Image 1: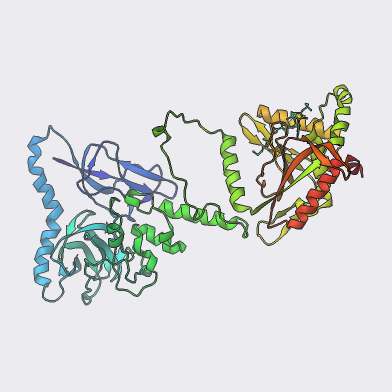
Image 2: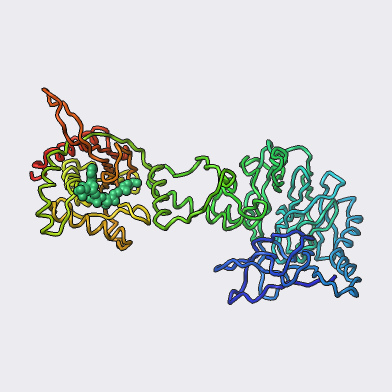
Length: 573
Ligand code: CAO
């Protein structure tokens, strides 16, 4: 067995870095390049890889510690078949590992009568021991909350121990500077075992007795996040309860969590969180309730990144209109299904446009309270007129389709019904009235759906609008639209008229407040008061944002649109 000490490598310019994650337990096997621990500078987070295969002996630092290049951070037992002659080494290593524990045991005997957890290592130095934990059993150390060099206040948590039912903070019996930590995560500790060597100031204070580990589930007890200690030292894990959670989730990997609290209850929900002291400190500083944060670390541990991602998400949601629902929150996820169990499948990557469309549709569907109103426009005369333009169109090189008339009519309807030419202000308290009239047109392309915008439609005639439809639809299909050509729309038209269907309910293209979906026109019998006459009817569906538009507004808009399309002479007025 060969013990190799791992030191902090060249940090690429950073003076100091923080230890943010100790992912392994003593005895865990490692392969070359496996991450031993994670360091973080103010610029980057870096995994420190193991230079050799073997097993972790112990960490020499705690999470939250600040280290420099060359500092020893871990010891690994290098797997080396060729080092049979080094068989004596384990003993040596054991000695190194246990030396303070031996001292501590002696000290414990001396101190047992008066202060079971305190023993003197020298006049200015104090070995801090595990106090009476109310049990003869050794329990696992799951978290070291201090680092060498830390100034620790009396009562600050030094380590967190965990039995199979509950966990507990071990508070410091002294204020002082940490000279040496003699334990590592994963070690088994019991009453009187040494934890750390302190340089203490002044007389030893009265002993502080740790709260006993309890076999009783504590999830229902009042629990508390300890107040942040004024000292710079990382603050211990707050009181948590996991026994119930562990017991009630058979088959789930056990998550270290529960810590019973004797302190006054501040928050009962801090019970189920699993996070290191540095993370807890940051969470407290930012006012983040860790119960709200999902942990992505080993065994669901909450990492610093989880806290910062949570904060980013909260800020993002705050920026959204106040009246808007936060998309997705509380909505049960669609279950992941392995479709291959039912037959042959193929996974197709989504295009960028498809992904964007999916995100936008979901956002709009969740944020906008939709109402859809239906009507038919009699476009018999419009179609007769449009077909009469064919020869002229050929001369001009322009193809006129019903979509040009629809866009022109939408412009006029928006002018007559300005409620539809508004958006909700980002503050959710105001409406923005637009005094321009740009209409978006959904275009179906092989890459996905895009919506180029025809600007100032009220200042353009049918020829110009038709030419622009062809141009923009062509660019859309060729993937040549510029971002500016897809921005600034006030209202959207989605025409499936060339494809078919009786009707559909389009999704509002927020922050616009209205969208018109048109389907295929069909000849239908219409009662004219005396007889049924064949008329070409265009099915239309108007979806609108009911926060900004009332049903009455929508009824007037739709009626106006029907009138314009049924008699296009009104478009000239
Ligand atoms: N009823 C009957 N026929 C119609 C019609 C309607 N409502 N709308 C168009 N047509 C006819 C046109 O007149 C044309 O026939 P003619 O050449 O004989 O005149 C034919 O259908 C094809 O038209 P087009 O599709 O080439 O041109 P357009 O101006 O009608 O449409 C565009 C342009 C870009 C809107 C369309 O090509 C398109 O992409 N539509 C799909 C939009 C979409 O996907 N919407 C859903 C969005 S939400 O998922």
